[in-house]
Every structure is written in structure tokens, then in C-alpha cells.
Image 1 (cartoon, rainbow, N blue to C red):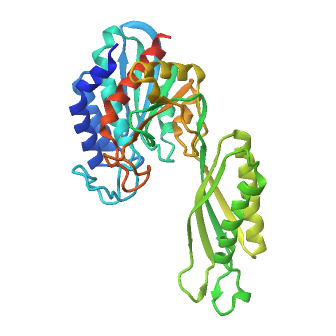
Image 2 (image 1 turned 45 degrees about the horizontal axis):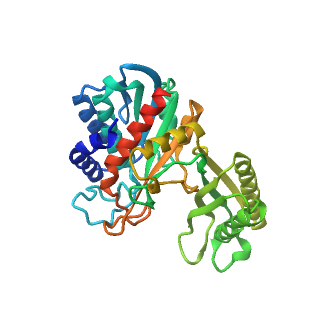
Image 3 (image 1 turned 90 degrees about the vertical axis):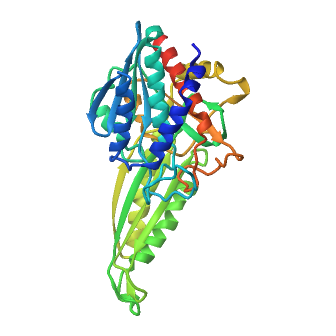
Length: 387
């Protein structure tokens, strides 16, 4: 089937929809307007919609031929960050931005659904297009799965536009492709006092600084150098004034691993280092770990289908392996139901100014890849449904 030609016929509307979403970003769990727009467009086409919450929409397209049920996940949330791009469709919400491409994903999901619906008389199986909230570390996949509405899926595909790859390239690789991202909050409690009498205090700033430094030894000395591990402290808050010994300090950050056994060891060493270092400084520590999601693992058979579909859309030199990443994605959770395949579409283009990393204020999506994304998802879904 000529999915790419069909996708390009929707291109003008797809761009307009994407640019509208970009102007009105919504944070995790607050994707209400986004879902209203999704429902407006798909409802007008007569597509069946499952709406278990204001920020969750699942479009259902049923083919006329027998086949499997395929789920396709598209995330919808934006980020609490300031947009720095001077675009005609720049974010209208101060301090909120689609800085990771989820607006592109949502647009791709809508027009993939419209394409499949237009071709349903020729298609096998059924397709559930999942508009998922709260992917940015906020367990949105868990919320979708808890509805029970995707339990009947035999396979899942997820797509992400990717700024590290040349625009228009397609990437799907078997095995682990994204790490497990655990988030942590550490509260160090000491004994405050006057800055002139540190010997009468237990300095939470000194203890916190020592904890930050000591945590780096987990990756360099406690875990095998053959295993990828990340320990990042992203924020450190303590103290109120230059001549006051801080009584408390709060550290926040992330732990990432690419293997379940390594992840368990990482968590064990993390607790040990923090408690021992805090105690050495006369302080105590409270440790809170938020286990966001597991490792994204691509199924061998689904990757073969994805690459087969890619071969129908682009020249062979544009089909490339994925680079394993320590980034996380809760698409990993759908593997609890059925095999999964998480693919990426390149969109790095210097001439178009699409060069900034994800989660950067200058991040910009190359809109030219939107039809290609739709065509690849539709083709992947059809192949999985008929096989």
C-alpha cells in the first residue's frame, strides 16, 4: 500500500495541527486541551474513541479482514521550560514548551489514525492509537494500562522523532534501546547553628557536597566498566544565609541502568553511600526512590517488520541502527502486555535550524518528517496485524 503518498496528502493539515499543539503545550497529567483537539479531529472522521479520562484518548480502527490487534503509543505532554526559538508558532505559555517532540508525536498519531481509517476496507486486524499522557517521568503508561483498554493488543509500536540522527533516517534495532530511569530525592538532616561555630553543628551543606562527590564513585568503582550506568544529581538546595550553618539539604537526581541486575546493584550502592557519608558528617539521610519505568526492549520479530516497512519508504542508506541511550521512556511498560518495538525518526538538519538537543529551549522539530513518521507507523501496524 502507498502509505507515504497518502500521508503527504494530509501534510498541510498535519503541519497546522502540529503547530497548534506547539503553541499550547500542557504539562504531564494536564493534557486536556490536547486531547480535546485530538477528539475533535478524529471524531469528525467518525473514528471510534475510547476516553477513560480527560487526558487519555484511544482511537480504534477496525480493518475489514481478520488479523491481530496492534497498539501504537503517542505521548502528549510538554515540559516546564522556556522556549528560546523565535518561531511564528512559538509557545504561548510562559515556562511551558514542547521541548521533546511530543507535539509531533501527537500529530503523527492523529493522522496515522485518519490514514488507517481511510484504508480500513483493505486492512487486516484492528489498531488502537494510544494518546498517552505524562511520559516525562510521570508514569503515564501505567495510567493507560490500568484502564484495561489495551489488554487485547498483540503488539505495540512507539515512535520518537530524534534530533541526533540526520533528518529522514529511520532507526529500529533489536534488544535494549533505552535505560531504566529512576528518580530520587535525598533529604540530609544535620544540626544548624552559627557560621562561626561549625564545631557545634552538623553541616548539611558539607554532608550534601560529600554525598554528591561520593555518588560518582558508584559508576567508576563499584559497577563494572562494561556496564552503562548514570548517577546524576540535578539539584541541590540548602541554606538561607552566609553565616548560618544549614540544618537541612535536599538533593534530587536520576539513576539509570541498562540491565535489571545492574539496576539492583546500583540502588544498593546508592543507599549505602548516602547513609555512610551522611553519618560520617554527623547527619542522617532520608532516601526516596521513584521507580519510573523499566528498560525499553525491542522485540526481534517486530524490528524485522519495522525494517521491512522502512525499506518500502526510504532508500537503504537511510535505514540505520539505533544508538543505545541512557534516556528513558515509559513505553517500556507496554511490554508487560505484549512484544514492543520503539523506533526513531531522524530530524537533524542544520539548514532548517533543527540541531538543538531534546529538552533544550532551542529544540525544533523538522516538520518535513511528519508524513514519513505517519507512513512508517501505518505500515508497521499493518504488517504486524497481518503476520
